[in-house]
Length: 189
Image 1 (cartoon, rainbow, N blue to C red):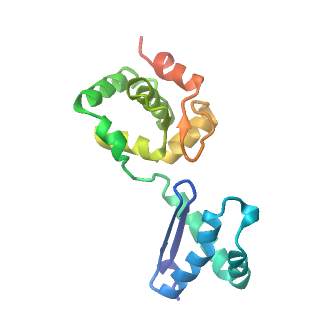
Image 2 (image 1 turned 180 degrees about the vertical axis):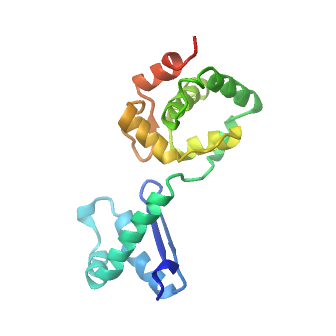
Image 3 (image 1 turned 30 degrees about the vertical axis):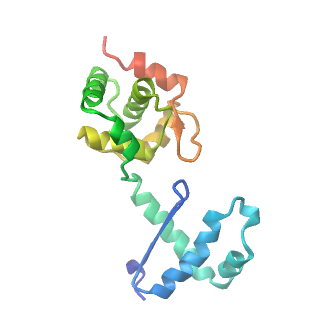
């Protein structure tokens, strides 16, 4: 069995599991191990079946965790378009957003600053209170801009800059600091 032919990707925020490989039995085994973990409401109430599967096949479970970590690190942008947001981004709204971004382009050069600017614009203009990596991807994609690693951009803007509050289910709210940066501090005088 060639290890490079197999991969496991777990996205807890979206509730997704992606397992690929040529051996269907191995894939079924990995699903049996991972599905109960993701669907359990609390880690302490993990089903007995999953615990048994984990203890029976610790080598496969360890391999799955290592591959999951590798996969998660290499793919930090979700790359999914949010159709609800895309529908709200009319040509007029895109023009307004481009103007808003252009006015702040010198001070909001990095992905973290751009995330705060975009999230504040969406909040002000579309009443879009929370932003996800998919929302950010949608804006960059619809605007025809170079797409950064959207999950990293949001996480770093939250942790390093304080532009967002801690995420809830992958959704970030712009903090007061992020709003001030987007509306005032990043705007060219």
